[in-house]
Amino acid sequence: MFSILRKMADAGVKIVCMEVSAHALYLRKLVGMQFEAAAYTNLSQDHLDFFGTMENYFKAKRILFNSGMVRNAAINMDEETSEKVMEELSCPYVTYGISAKSDLYARDIEITESSVSFMLKLRDVPGVRIHLLLTGMFNVYNALAAASLGMIMGFSIDQIKSGLESLVSVPGRVEMLPTDTPYRMILDYSHSPDALSNILKTVREFCRGRIILVFGCGGDRDRGKREIMGRIAGEMADFSILTSDNPRFEDPYAILRAIEAGIATTDADYEVIENRREAIRQAMEMAVGGDIIVLAGKGHETYQDIAGVKHPFNEKEVVQELLAEMVRDETNRTED
Figure 1 (cartoon, rainbow, N blue to C red):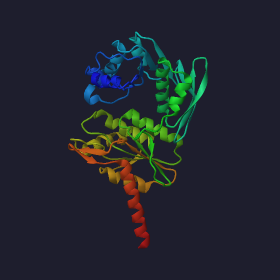
Figure 2: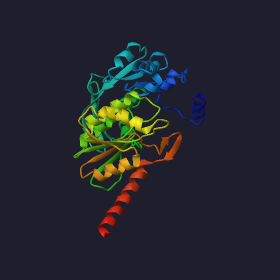
Figure 3: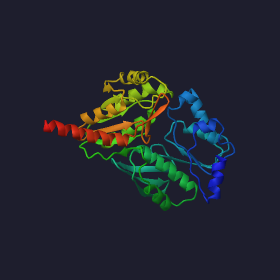
Figure 4: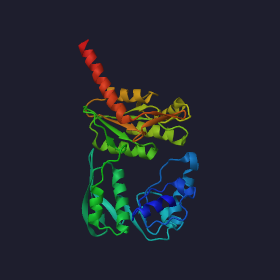
């Protein structure tokens, strides 16, 4: 890390923005680092294959804020674990949120399938309208976190507005795929319970038909989240197709059975198709106008990790190939 920062400094870089992982903190990879500002966003179930319990996971995240590494902090007041973080904070901090009383907050939120807009307000200061070329309530929270850090760093509200509004969609994150079909398809990297819940909430905001969800869970990772994600799918999607993600060295059908145990506790309609390509095709064949297909879990990845081999699998390319196949099949049926 210090070697990388040295190269960046030599190249003239003045500000570095980075995500600090709980793994890096726990493994002491960032000892000696000093951050001018850091944001505490949330705690949701993930990585328990490494940390064992949510308490251990939280303690690892909190290291950033109780070790003297941070000079200023921004805290999400809508996150229930934030008060525990603030108990040991010895540095100045600002708060942000939507529901809870905060220094910086969002009001009059409007969400569409391709954007979100809201009033960004700071205590008694007149608000400014922000229009993001990203969608979803979680991106409002991300924008508030970024704005809080920007203010700590001394950027003006106009500079913050300009920066937020210049953002474009991140590949594999709520990415609308070009399909030219009566239904829509969204690619998203969501591979944890919280992320899956967020994408489904977001899509429900603008979906006029059914949400058809295609997803699985990775092998050799936190097994406890599989049943939870199955239950979330059953409660929030109209139809789910359980399929393989990156099974790695696990039996893909064992992973699917664990997910199925969760979805079976709901009254949801679903089916299991282990082959991910066939699962996507099935979703496309059953979708009609107004429906939205959510391909969750792979996002920007261009492979499937199966038994130690990374097989090429770019879902954007797979969708285009399937569209072409379906057009050919329909043409052949018509000619027959």
